[in-house]
Image (cartoon, rainbow, N blue to C red; front, side, top):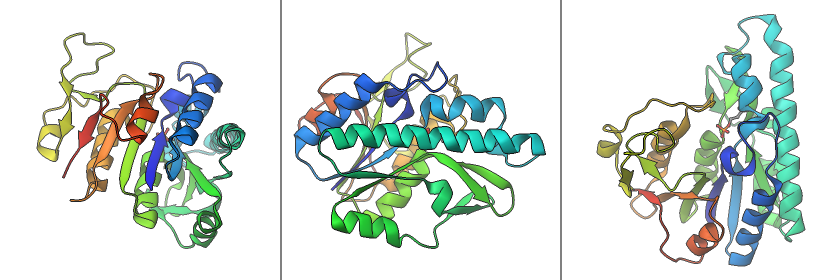
Length: 256
Ligand code: IP8
């Protein structure tokens, strides 16, 4: 099984509040279906999550009661994106159910607590793909917080032991600087913990969950001697399909 994260940057337009990129999302779902591979999907929140979360600092928790409504709105919007994506999966013949982490898990001081995963396991067992996403989750100490799609990838990797892990983003892979603002940015085809230390960690994206560096660190945590994690550009038509078919494509591979 291959575990795939469809990043918010590919299924939404991150510059516009709640703008679903339906063409791209539907193409990526078609590529997944056409590959014939057994997959599980997690997705990011893109402009359905980060715009309001950043404006109201929802990730900092319940620091004042003015944040209650924004937290509810971010959760609502993330659920809406979940439904939009599972609709696209259904259209290509993949039975999928959007599962909101905020309504089945809690956090304890920022750490995700999973007391009951039976529904998710049973869905997978009968052939319904449980699709989780970055969401607002209640926190025992902080009131609430945000769980990122990357944290959920780690949870799914623990639960379902995929053979390969793929992060689908809007860049070809990791660069030593942000390639969108630095034309001299150098591409890094293979990353290890040592290489990560040399990467410029400053982010200029509207991302409350930390951007590319956090993603790479979470990818490195998911690597095992038998399993690597790959970051690819899903805005290039056919690239995800080629990767799923086992072909060589431009990407960054995280290795232990
Ligand atoms: O897009 C963030 O998840 P991510 C979730 O995977 C929210 O970083 C609600 C902002």
